[in-house]
Length: 240
Image (tube, rainbow, N blue to C red):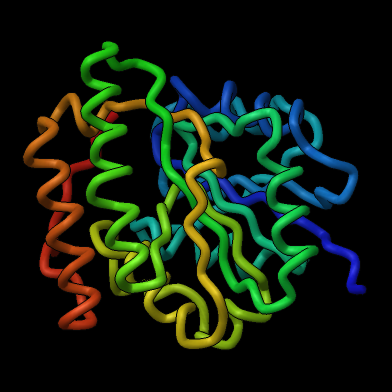
């Protein structure tokens, strides 16, 4: 059996408010086979880079091309692990996050990618109830139908599978990036969306854009990727 070596990759753009807590959660939860933690600074103008440099055991690289896919691709090319775990900079891993990755990839040689939902840390109870309905009544049934789904700020992928699809599509800057990745990985292996594989994250986009608008935009681009094989929303706003 091949020993799993996990590289953690965190894209970051102006994340001074969150990046410290994100990295602390990774360092606290990591298993012995986590071989590196890489933060990809995607043109930050705040103190993101200096916060990262102040933390031992974290590697900082830069990616000048703006966009989530370009940042993740840079992390991919800079990393050395045979499992690549991606988390957004405004998120925190759960205590069992790495143990779950190890268990799933060790037991399933054909598993290309593992993903799961967010748990939002800054919503009211009724809002979290609405989010739970979204995952249970819309997202998970869509996964059962297509057999693929990836949440961009919470997934782990086998390096060999990512190499087989030539990495991330860097022409996609935000919306549809994870749906595109899931669809293409599905062609080379199993893509599993598991409700128990979660992390904690901020609800800043939901709060800023509204639940209905945000949800509708994500759903529309997921469907566009599934049917048209391309996202339909070209522009996005960086919300910090």
